Image (cartoon, rainbow, N blue to C red; front, side, top):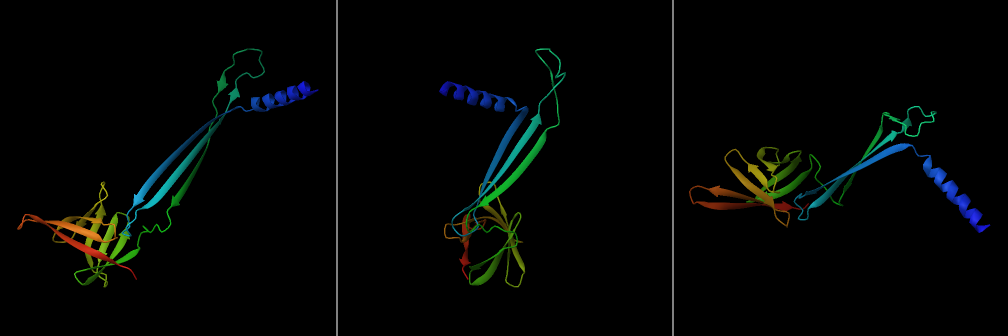
Length: 178
């Protein structure tokens, strides 16, 4: 009796798996980006895109008694899903404003798609900041082009080459927490 039950379960299992007539292709692409928003610790953004293509298998001349039968191509059904996960506190939203001070003057950093715009509180543009491939920033004012970066304390440090002294001048925008 026990062998008979096992034989029935095995036959049902094989018949259930034999009925699947489709090719399934699954592809998953994960992109991880770390953003230094000036708070000291980089924030992580993970984008995962899953694509599943299901292609039904149809047999040409399915009713013939031929052993080796040809398959017919069918149109695949593609389902694509995208999910985005972000760290707690991720704040690299376009248009967000952060407050800084340098040499006793107030400045605001306004995040843009390409980086930041630095302005005075009365909205007068002072500089543009654009991210480079190595994680630093190009800092452009009407009079100079420099290199900048966010230090671990969240302050923005600008290093400018000085022709007269043949040295590097360092200025720091100190983050103001309100």
